[in-house]
Each structure stands twice: as structure tokens, then as C-alpha cells.
Image 1 (cartoon, rainbow, N blue to C red):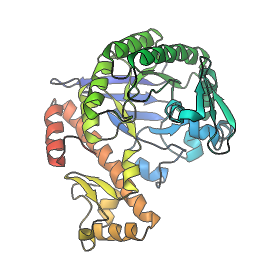
Image 2 (tube, rainbow, N blue to C red):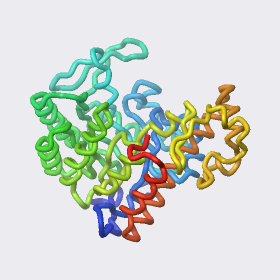
Image 3 (cartoon, one colour):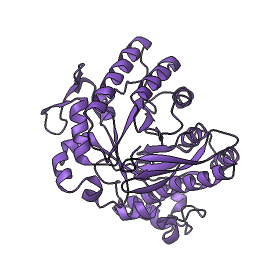
Amino acid sequence: MSKENVYIEILHQDKYSNARYGILHTPHGDCELPMFMPVGTQATVKCLPPEMVKQAGSGVILANTYHLALRPGADIVSKAGGVSKFMNYNGPMLTDSGGFQVFSLGELRKITEEGVTFKNPLNGDKVFFSPEVVMDLEEKIGADIAMVFDECVHYPATREYMLDSVNRTLRWAKRCKDSHKRKDQALFGIIQGGEFEDLRKYCAEELIKLDFDGYAIGGTSIGEPREVEYKMVTYASKYMPHDKPRYLMGVGSLDMIFDGISKGIDMFDCVLPTRIARHGALMTSKGRLNIFNAKYKEDFTPVDDECDCYCCRNYTRAYIHHLMKVNEEFGKTLCSIHNIRFLIKNMELARQAIKEDRFTEFAKQTMDKFGSKKGF
């Protein structure tokens, strides 16, 4: 693969699991794997300046094609020099194709073989997304990694519908590959198939024939039971190429991240850490903490005495409790940077454990201390 593009180096494989340590090379810098990617849907990680996200140890940030196409428009992002320059983030970026957002519109959209027509929720205008349209948008937005346009099917779905959907996703993936021209931007395929192992296998094998730069697992964390989610990842991950980046989309709970790492997944993203932070829920080494709880009113200790984030180094639970109670935005900022750093720090610790062939032990000890097998 051209070194203009995105490629992976696997430097160590854990002896007791499929967890792997490596480097993701991109035009905007290199990142250690496995990694958690903060979500900057509208070219911003909510409540946080990009410099603070970078200081927390972030590698890739994810932005969303659907939202940026609606506002401010892909042409404006392109004129700014691409999404990294537009938001002043000194690092690599990835754009989700918007498939999940489009298909979550329900009755506001209509699927055909050509693409999806939907009503703009901002002004009611009719909008059309096809593989070719989405590739044009993602090339203009200019992230280091673009995702193909796929159909994300709601759970549960019948096997008959899922088979039709997988075949449509495969046809759309080929159209994306054929229309994607930007040489400095990687294109990842997305493995769908729901809870059906044979369909996950079929989708993965057909996508591999198209030779994408990386592969993602889609269609998880959409309301299915946790045990089904584990199975979906298992079904898809064992067919993903060893020499390409592997990405599990939309996962941000500690248990699912560790499970994915044990199955050889390199990349994770989710809005979870910042979304729950804005409601006062904090991830700590000893489990979940609700900062609105009255017992923190006079608690002058850090959120987590094992955390090295900006929040924990400078502020107390009492102060953050006060900020959140009076609805000050700075409180949301502090909670958000803590949760982002919590996940990124756990990725750092996971990488070290992989290099020392003790990832399984590390994950178990961390989750036992966290106090829940199911994370958040």
C-alpha cells in the first residue's frame, strides 16, 4: 500500500489472546494501536477544544459526513483545507459515511438500489445520498480515513431482510470503491450481517475481495442484548484480514472495548464518554460516579485518584459538583475531558499489557476493580 495512504504495522501479538499492538500510519501522523477515537460529530468533540483532546492522548478523531454535509456543507470544509484544518486538530481524522444517521431517520427516508432519499431534519428539504454522493462528500471533507456508505439495519431484523441488506451493502461498497479517487485518503469497508454468523462471514469475505484499506464491524450497539453484541463481534472479527486495520464502530464501554481488543480489534469510537459526562456520569477506576450525588458537595478529592487528566490534576469533586448543579458549561468540559482521558489511558495500559503478553490478566483485573462486567 502506498505510504501516502493509511496502513498498519503489527509489532506484537499477545501470546494468550488475539490482542495486538501496532502503529497506524496516516498522512496526519502515526497512532499506537489499539486506540479509542473521540467523536467530533460536527467537527468538534462536544465541550472540548481540540488542543485539550490532543493533550489527553487522542490519535484519530471521528467526524460525521451526514452532519457536516448538512452544516456547514462539504464545500466549505474543503475550502478551509479539510476537516483537520477546519477544526484546528493536529492529528488524523476519520469520517463516518452517515449511513447510521440516515437509516436512523425511519419514515423520513426511502431506500432504493440507487441510494437513500431523506428529509433534511433542519429545514425539510429533500436530500439524496448514494455511494457516489457520499464518496464525493468524504473526499471534500478530507479526513485521513473515509468509510463506505452502507445500510445499518435496526435490531432485530429477519434473516431474509438482513441477507437483502448485506447484498445491497456489498453492491454499494463496490460503487464506493469505484468512485473513490483520493489517493491520500484510505477507504474502509464495513462488515454487516446482524446476529447471523453466516452473513457476517459472507459479507467479510466479499468485502475482502474488493481490497479495502481497512475493515470495520458495523451494526452493533444499536439496542441488541450485550450477549448478542459479543457474538456479532466474534462472528465478524475472525474473518478480518490480519494486515489491515480493524475497527469496531460505535463502542465505548470498557467491557466491549476489552472484548474487542481480545479478538484483535484495533480501533474503537463512541459518543458515550462525552454524552454521559454532560449528565454528570464519570468513569473511574472504581466504577461509575454520579457527580450530582449530594455526598460530593464537600468532597475535596479528585474525581479519580488514579487519573492524570487535567480535571483530576486541578479540580475537586466538590467543585465539579457545584458547577454541574448550577449548570455551568465548564463543569461539562471537566467531566468530558476526564471521561475521554479515562478511556485513552486504559488504551495505553492495554497496549503495554499486550506488549508484555498479559492483556487477558490486565483486562480482568481492571474490570474486577471497575466493579461491573458490563461497563457502562
